[in-house]
Image (cartoon, rainbow, N blue to C red; front, side, top):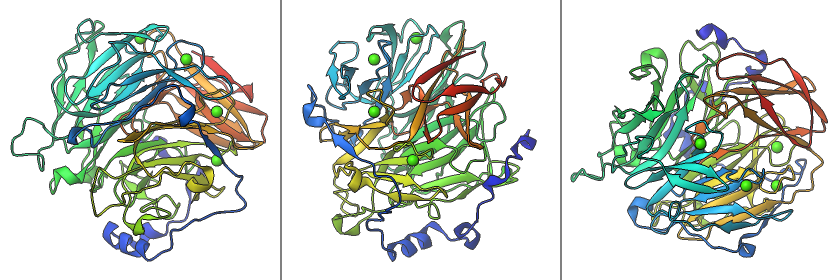
Amino acid sequence: MLAQMLFRPNSGNVNTLKDIGLTLGVLSVLLSSLSYADQSNNHLPPVRFLDLTSEQPFSHRYTGGWEHFVGGGVAAFDCNNDAAPDLYIAGGESPAKLLVNSGNKKIRFDHKPHSSTDLYAVTGAYPIDIDSDGIIDLAVLRAGENVLLKGLGNCQFVRANESWKYVASDRWTTAFSATWESKAAGPTLVFGNYVDRQNEAGPFGACDKHELYRMQNRVFKKPMLLAPGFCTLSILFSDWNRQGKADLRISNDRHYYLHDGHDQLWQMQDQPTLYTETEGWQTFKIWGMGIASRDITGDGLPDYLLTSMSDQKFQVLKRGAQGPEYKDEAFKRGMIAHRPYFGDEGRPSTAWHAQFGDVNNDGTNDLFIAKGNVDQMPGLAIKDPNNLLLQDEPGIFYEVGRQAGIADVERSRGAALEDFNGDGLLDLVVVNRRAVFRVYQNVSETSGKWIGVKLQQKGNNTHAIGAWIAVKRDGNIQYREVTIGGGHAGGSLLPQHFGLGHTGTVQIQVTWPDQTTSKWQEFASGKVWTILK
Ligand SMILES: [Ca+2]
Ligand SMILES: [Ca+2]
Ligand SMILES: [Ca+2]
Ligand SMILES: [Ca+2]
């Protein structure tokens, strides 16, 4: 099956640091001696965001004690089918909020209160059409019982734990991902859990197990436990080697697993098993907080940005690897983002949600990273600005957060980088712990073109999760896997946005979850297209 991994040659990038074999510790020391101040790069097009927080008719904070030091996710999706993305935001000890997009050219959200959605103890949420009726539902993660909300249309939801026979536990859930293991079945859901709240010897060394739910006859069977758990804050089903099915990547927080844990990759089968070092999976320990996935290297395989304290990791599959053998390219690509790029005495950063997207529509993916202290950890930056890393042509990223106007220094957690006003420019919302939820409109004056792609298929898996979209322009192809999961405690289920530079017409090919491949078809830029299977 790994024969498929012989992909296009343009992944033949120079290997610098990985060949030197630097350890993380040595790398950190090396980095601290480098200047990491404003790396302004004049030849990149200017990117500017307008902070519209004070103009919103609501205010929201993610609050609470130590069970809400983590979490604070946001789900972005369209709950009333008007093509304007709506939001569901975690509140911790404050109620979660459903926000309906009521803006026009200017972004605006209105809180839609309802007892089914104004839930307490919510850490995050992910949009997913669980029952394949074409209306998006929500998986709501909580410190305590998780809740599945069935979408009824017109932004109305009803609790569906009982009707779908989803038997939730009392665990502290902080991560979620979903895949369709076959077209015939419903979704497979995995809830990633953090510290075991019932373990009196905890919290250190007391990581909880994860729960995997499969469907049969349109209801969920009793969950299978995935163990050992190592205190995860992000999980993602992703087809890492294009074998035609997703495996489950788990990023774990070494702060609580202490010595025995590491990041994990579960091979999905009836009884999932962990990939081992003999199969190529090189274990490593980070303060794993979030996962952002995208093909940055252009080889048609997903790369993974893992957020952490101090250095981020950027995992790229080794060329010719016979298993899940990754090298780290965060340093050489400028994605380390290990400490604040201004202020705060240079203490290390704490990074949470991360998301790739082309904020200037020049045809290359850029990267947003939410930053913020856990609460009062003195060894880490207290005023920790969020990052916006612009990608230059050779796959190198430059910090422009401050110039772009998104350098909030509050304790940021979840975020969504999506086009909230339909003008083709990716906007940004950010959930902050003990500080106000931020809404930013992208007002960059860029001439770059864009296209939106929405996949739709009949039967189960209406949003074609697991599909790959290829967008070709000027001989260059961008590849995109459609997934549910990753981020930090929240994700989007919206049309896929592609920046196109100056190209007005592109060709698109879809590899559907059943691995059938569509013909290349031509599409005009400047709008969202729905591609049906
Ligand atoms: Ca809407
Ligand atoms: Ca549904
Ligand atoms: Ca870009
Ligand atoms: Ca926009």
